[in-house]
Image 1 (tube, rainbow, N blue to C red):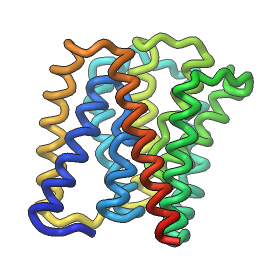
Image 2: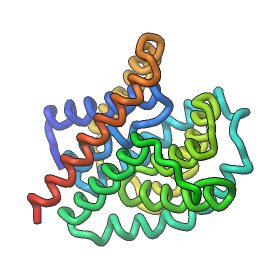
Image 3: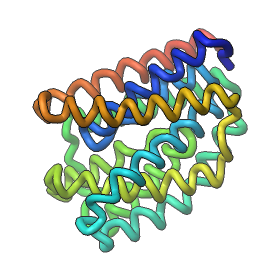
Length: 243
């Protein structure tokens, strides 16, 4: 684990970027922050910190949009995620660090590429699609800290608008990150690091809300996916180097 003021500043910068992106687009904290957090803190602490931060942001974001949550879709999504979170947590605890970096980087990279292509998958429609997306998302969230792409693909195949997607993604984020934290525990951070994370999250909310009024949604989404793809490829490279 990186220590000292430089490490704390880098940690705050990563969380600030991820938080800003989350408030800017309604998603993306984990996609942007997890690869960097894993490289900085190690796979286990990087993942669980992402779970904690993304869950907290989702709670705040959901406060204004909970009436637009779709229970018919969210119940099977969340139940399926609850079943696969323990498997993801087991993988995180058992794999050697280079192998885990490879798995995380590959999951992020493949998921981002699928979202960028706007993949249409018949299996991701209806209740069965919700169960499939929730199961994959739950595993990915607890194993790699990134559970959003399967839900994005489900929403894409269900024909949801951005207005419909955001509150439902936030609801899913609250639930699946709560399960993931319960399975993985909390990150082993010093008091100064927790302070840096909290301040960065608050600053990120201000920055993201400000930028949301100035940056077109499509451009912001492309930026998020590009950053995530870069991080995923970097994690794969570090994993291969470690082998």
